[in-house]
Length: 250
Image (cartoon, rainbow, N blue to C red; front, side, top):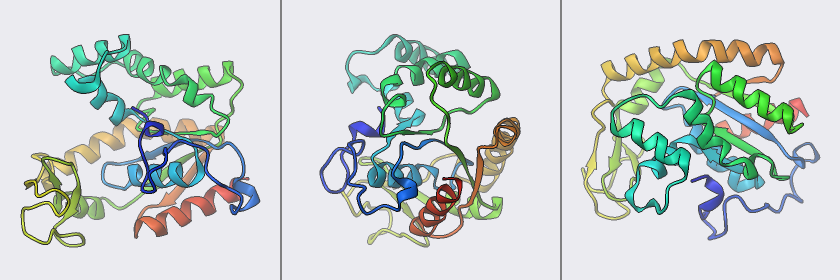
C-alpha cells in the first residue's frame, strides 16, 4: 500500500502531517509531485525522505503491485485482483489497470498535505490519465522530479546490490557490505543478488526504461513542470538538491 500506511523510524505514520514549522516558507505548501528515474537511481529512497519529512502521501506502484500479489494482503480490491491475474499469467499489466490501482488511492491524491507518485506514470497513456484526473479535481501538478544518473553508475550500484531473502534489507558489496558475507545484519537472513542484477541485464533494463520514458520527459517538459535533479551522491546530498530544486519552483 502507499507509504502513508508505513511507520517511520520514529514510530509515527509516514504519511501523517509533519511538523513543518522549521521548513523554509517556500515548502510550507501541499506539493503534488511525480518522481521519475531509472532503476537504481534511489528514487524510492528520496520518496521515503520526502514523505517522512514533509508529511506528503507516498504512493508507490511497487508497493501496490506487491500488495496485489501478496496472499497475506487480505481482501483484494477489484483493481488489485485484476492486476494479480495479469501478473500470475506473466503478462504486462495494462495501463488502464495500473491507473485503476492508483485511482484507488484518490483520497491520498486529494490530501491537503500533498502527495508524491513513485513509479507512476510509466507511459504516456498513464500520464494522460493522471492529467485528466487532476484537471477534473482542479489539482495542479507541482513538479515532476527527474532523477538523473550516468548508466555506468547505475550498473555499478545494481550489480553490487544484495537483498535479504527474509526482511528485504538492501546491502552493497562495496559501500554497504554486511558484517558477515552473505548474512543480513538486520535479521540473519540469506543475502542474494537478483538474477537480473548483472551488467548485461541491467543495460537491457536501462534501454527499455529510456525508450518508455523519453515521451514522458517531453510531455512534462512541454507542461513546464519537469525538474531534473542530479542523483549521484549520498541520499542526503540528493535530498538537499531535490529541496533546492523545489524551492526554486516556489
